[in-house]
Length: 239
Image (cartoon, rainbow, N blue to C red):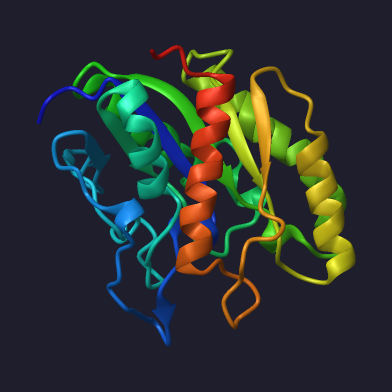
């Protein structure tokens, strides 16, 4: 597989892993045109740490305990590929995970670092950004007050462990989760994170499925475009 020149980490929980089109633990198989595969210019790092042509569901062999469908990754990649060239996606998201489970030394964090390093070595590409969508599982009275410190630690540790102190981070402000008061607190924390080279994309207004937790397929496409706009407007040096 040819080298990936622009590598993006996809991490967080279920809405990054993708539940678009999943009903009753079965994915409907519908792929919107915005998420169409491009075997030459959009690649993914699979669970065996090998590059392959990317297609939804991107997290099928990563978030293995749940059924995965359409997420924001393919819409993002299609929206940026003409500006950045070959896109390499590194799926790392796992549904239902709390921020505390992403602490350095834990399985999720260590696997993310392992996969990111493998992506960079295998093909000589550069990691350009991490796309992060997580927080629904922390929208509770017991966990919300710990969220800010834990979230910032994940971002700082990621940059340190990848020897990339200014790695761009694009996170999504959640739109669902537990009780609204705690969702609002998580959203406030996410929007007020003040780290260099980090921006927040707001999922407010994107349509949820009937479970009132996961984004619809159409909403995932919209989110992918929002993430792409954030990257191209704030971080891309392409033509």
